Image 1 (cartoon, rainbow, N blue to C red):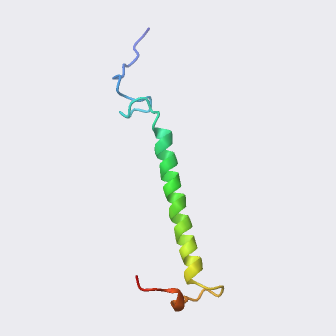
Image 2: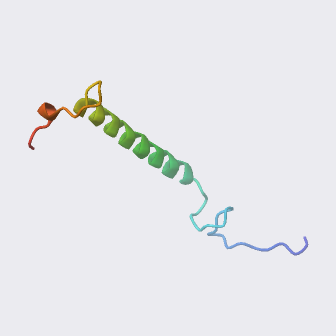
Length: 64
């Protein structure tokens, strides 16, 4: 069959060594969910701390 280069059985088709590549989708989904969650948390926090004229509402800050 010609001069095809052979890969080790542990290598993925992309050249890495992550097995069969089935976890790539789960990793990307997890990273996407983490990113969207972070953006949502920052957005909700900003809405609670600032008013419509973009002024910091010190009354809404509490000591923890």
